Image (cartoon, rainbow, N blue to C red; front, side, top):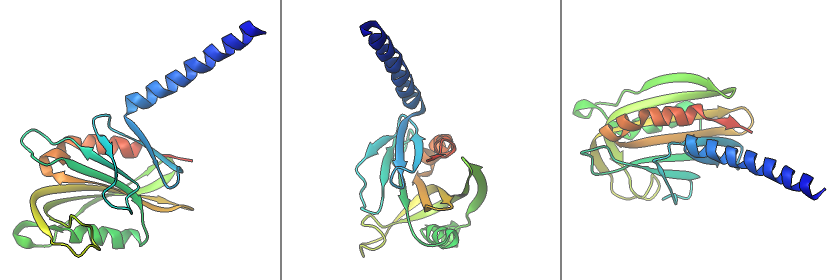
Length: 186
């Protein structure tokens, strides 16, 4: 009996260890939506305390060589339609000569869930205190944002937003895409 328990424990330990190794290889596993959506961010992104209470999960993304500022990836649930949120993101950017930014858009299905992708570049109108803080806007030139709107049928919409200096976001674009592709809906 004792030998059987030890053998069972060894098998369970092996599988738990293997599962943790898989998660570690994928990167920083995290959940949003009260644990209903699971994703894995790249291993070199650093999870940090969100700077806003409406953000569920936040990561600092290492700057590319030559960039001073890191990138920022936020994940959160929010109200409003897909279009109204994309309009808000577009409003956070100015294109060449101050013209309206033109988003590149794409769609995909991951884990049976529709996802809308948005790609914006230009001058980012940063509101460090958040959109409702009433603080001063800082224009950050040569910035880029990658967004993914996860549209669940019964849990609402969730928003992933990676933004920062363009070279940093360019360097982390594949990591962002891989993170979105890692989506598992529970």
